[in-house]
Image (tube, rainbow, N blue to C red):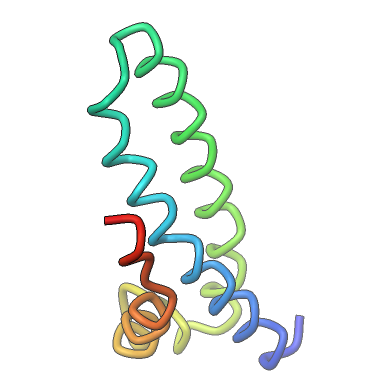
Length: 86
């Protein structure tokens, strides 16, 4: 993957974090039975997010959201904020 495509992937992944966070918050509104079902599905989303981001940051450490790319990733997440759902 070239760096431009990697940066686009990082931006797309950052855009999903607000939605994933909102889904996590909504778990508290579910019955225990529903919560377990959705918690498992949410875990799958998080795992897939990790599976997509790791090869990118291994190839381009400067894009690592928990390293050199932290400021950029935070700005990307904020630009995709889901405030309308709060």
